Length: 294
Image (cartoon, rainbow, N blue to C red; front, side, top):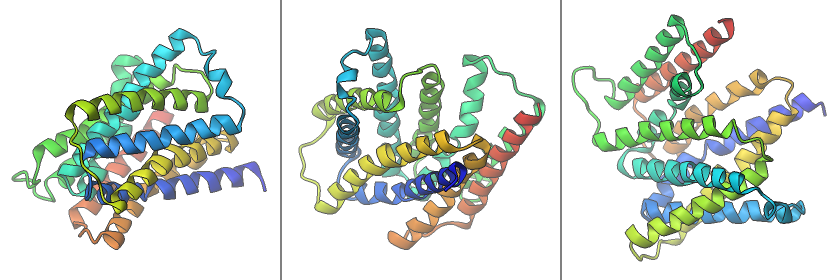
C-alpha cells in the first residue's frame, strides 16, 4: 500500500475515534464528577504511553532528559492534559454535549488569533472576515438560533467551553518549539498532568465510587482521546506527502460526533447547532485558503 493511502487510513481512523469521545464524556460524567474523570483518564493515558515506551525499549532514554526539557514538559503538562481537560470536562458537565463540542471547536480560529501576539504572525483583512464568520457560528450555537437573547442554560459553561480552545491553542503554540520525540514528550506531559490532576483531586474532590459504566468510559477516554487517536494522527502526519491532504479530514469529526450523540445517548440536536457548526467550519476553511494565498 502506498504511503499516502496509509496516511489516509490512519488519519480517518483517528478522526473517527475522536468523534466518539463527546459521547464518552457524557457517559462518564453521568456517574462521576469532572475531577474524577480527569484523574482516571490521565492515569490511563500515562499507563498507555509508559507501555509504549517499554515496548519500544525507550523508557531508559527518559531518564537522560535534560532538566530544561523536563521543566518544559511540566509547563506543557499543566496546559494539556491538566488545565485543558479540567476546563473541558467541567464545561461538558454544565452544558449539553452538542453545545460544549461545538464551542470547543473554535480552537483553529483561537490558534490564529493567539499566533499574532505570540508568534508575531500577520493576518489580512480577508482572514479577519473569515474569523468573524466563525464567531457568528458561535453566537448561533450559544443562542440556539436566537439573536435577541442568550438562550443557553449556563453562561459559565459557555465561557469554559470557549476558554478550553484558548488553552489548547496555547499548548500547540508552545509545543511547536519542543523538538523532542513525540512519544517522549507525551509521556512526560501526561506524567506531570497526572500529578497536577491527583493533587487537585486530593484537595477538591469527594470520595465517591463511580459506577462501572462511568469508569469504563473514563478509561476509554484516556486510551482513545488522549492516546491511540493522537498516535494514529502522528503516524498519518509522518506518512502523508502534504498535511493539506489529511488536515481537512478532522473537520468531519464534529458532525459525526453530533450524530453519535443522538444515536447513543439520545441527545436531541438543534438545527441551530448544525447551522452554527457548519458556519464555524466554513469560516475556518476559508481562513486557511486565504492564509495560503497571502
